[in-house]
Each structure stands twice: as C-alpha cells, then as structure tokens.
Length: 208
Ligand code: FE
Ligand code: ZN
Ligand code: FE
Image (tube, rainbow, N blue to C red; front, side, top):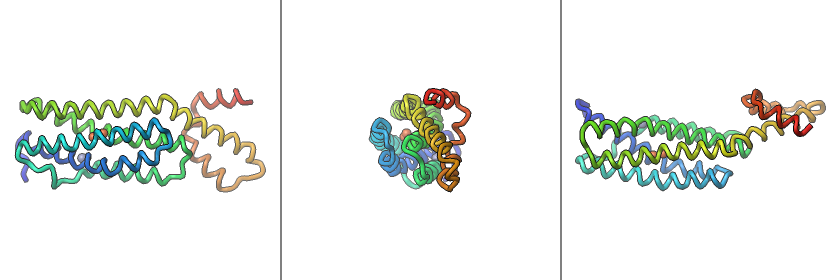
C-alpha cells in the first residue's frame, strides 16, 4: 500500500505498534520469570497487563478507521526482544541479572515512547480525538513504566549489582595467589565496567 498522507503514515505506525505490543506480550513473562527481585517481577507482570490493554486499544482505533491491525511486523521490537533473550543466557549474578533485565526493559519502553509520541502528535494534527485520548493514555503508561524501572534500579538493584562485583573482586584478590583459573578471569571481565565508581573504594575501605 503506497503511503501518501499523514493518515497513511499514522496507520502504518499504529500497525507497527500493534505488532510491537503483541511481541512484548510474549516476551514480558519470560523476563518476569527470570527476575530475582520481587519488586521487579511485579513491575514486569503489571506492565504485561497494560501491554495487553495497549494492543487492544490499537486494535480498536484501527478498526474504527476500517483498517486491520495485522499484516506488519515490527522489526525493531523483534531485535530488542532478541537482545533481551541473549542477555538472559549470560552467566550473570542475581543482582547483575536484575539490573540487566531493567536496562533491556527500558530500551523497549524508550523505543515504544518514540513511536507513541509520533502517533499522538499525528492524531492531534488530524483531529482524531478519540484515538488521541487512547494513545495519550498508552504513552503515559509507557512513561510511567520507564520511570518505575528507574526507581527500582536506583532504589537498590544497581547498588546491589555493584556490591556483588566488589565482593567477588575482593574474594578473587584473596584467592588470586593460589588460583588464576578460568573462574576468576571470567568474573573479573564481568565487573570491569564498575571499577571506576566511588562506591567501590568506600565499601572496600569499610570492610578492611
Ligand atoms: Fe506498550
Ligand atoms: Zn517498530
Ligand atoms: Fe511498554
């Protein structure tokens, strides 16, 4: 179908979002199941319920314009979900795993926010008032989901993930003389990103 008008583009992006939301409905339970923090798992499960609702809003909008929501695949969401799945295969410590699930979920939310931002704006320009209301509601939910993930990360999971790394590095320092085997090498490469932080020197001083 050739795209000639803003309305055509709007329908195109709504179909893309519909596919994105449907893919997420499949992926979110896997991310929730992998999470070790109850708070994170609950947040992901709640967003799953919202995601189902968001998909049916798009269905409702497109049907009201005589369009089918089906027939398009969101390649961007497919890639993000693929990346999230690959991450779950990493050999990550509990808190590092949770912090990683959060960042992967936030990539998804930001991606959704970009397209919802556009379709909200188009709906406003074209005066599709009912659709605008529904899409604004979804956009707000996506922003809230992103914010909540920030809060969960900043409220402790990032710090726990950092502490895990520090403990391991200290243990390795002690073991280091006797054992320079694969385990030590593997986990130190996993924690290199955290070396620079101030938290680390504080906590190692406290324990010495
Ligand atoms: Fe969504
Ligand atoms: Zn897409
Ligand atoms: Fe979302």
